[in-house]
Image 1 (cartoon, helix red, strand yellow):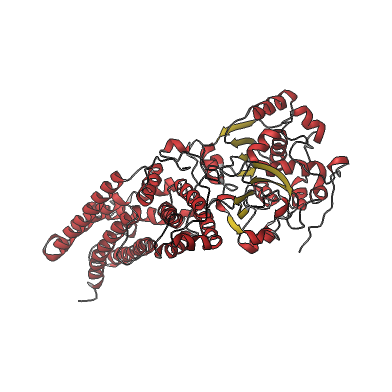
Image 2: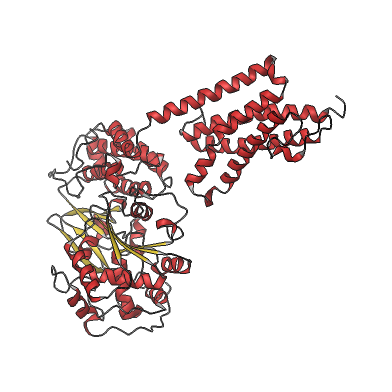
Length: 202
Length: 428
């Protein structure tokens, strides 16, 4: 590996790791939303894992972007990492990367100041994850010849299948969910064995 | 013991106001006061005192809704905020065993409305609400008479609360007044920072406002003439005995045994269904103030005092209450939603005969698991009740384990509503 290609390799490698991390972050986020658990972990740990892994993913994306910009073989302007379609090289596919990155920044920044935000606003912005991940995935496949063949292609397909399965599970689980007010009588009936509508006094 | 220095600028009370009780309730029990008799007894509310918050601070008045938070601090927080501000008189006494706010709103509505206007002026509120379980003719009449007399600066919007245990909780109240269900919200922000429609909101219990209306008239020194140095004033208490339920106005710090509790009691529930049981031997020496009660893990709360007759089963009573509390969970926080029904089932098992050995340990464990993990204090309050049940009725638990029960009377003693919430409409 010569000095001129080290940035290129670093960018491709961190890009692939970032895709894996983002897949994990999305699946963990769905788990947090559905109050699911991971074996051996309490629920709050699932939440922390989701948060910490998203910050780790951003760190990898930062290196991925900076090394791509620093590499001199093709010219990618630094601003094209946040301004979509501003790069002459691979204008469309790098543009998708910039869009996805912008959406992630919006989610991270609103999460860091979540205490000061309206919950509905925070949630609306966080739902952009379902747009950000597919755009990032398209960016990965489209701009990288590596991912279009061999075992990296298999890995990419696996990521897509996992995300699709998690999203479907989320929808199915939400559809099964009882309305808030009906949860209490249902659980009370399960534990105390009484009919939900039974009178309490006697 | 610290004493708050008093530089009393308000006029001292004269004549029959000096120290006598009742202060809030009618002098002739059972006769509600209309505006004329109200003004005849207390005079007009002294509007326009710029130092009212300071006077309240000197009086040492604490919230009478249960949390006993210093009133002047909440007043000062909202007074310091800018822009539109809201005040709410909270009469949604949701504790089924408490009757004092309902009684006060019927017997002395004008005193509450005086306090609402005085506190509104002190914090610069531009919107005033009265939140209660059912609008009584007395309230309607008081509002009409005050409007006709041009007594009030702010119009008062009256809203009815759903019959839910948590309906009077501060953030649930704000949610309900905003058109939503009366379920607690997540804190922060506190309603004093961002409440109704985003405006800083002061929520005070109706009894607290009634005391404030008298402090504004007669001053802190008058207020401190009864009660203890740290917990001055009088309080309304709902006293349950075998024969009846009564609301009394008592000096804070009076010995519990003076509160016409019957001799045949086996234990006393103090502070309501988020409160604690006290064993009989404590009753002889205890006084009605938080300094004393906290030594036994209890608190005055909203002033519910129930003397459990000797012929009832404390476990059966506690099981009914905890089942009710579990049913009244808003269903938002996992530990409360899942933990309280388990505890209710375990207590029901203890109240039966021949329970499993494991059950009591399970209860202790679940009590630890739900504590401090709700958006509101419903799980914590329920745990306080459950733990004191396990302690005070330990001999009864042992008896039940052997297939016996000491009770001879199966009639339920502690009052509970007979309908539990099933749909979202039940919370509106």
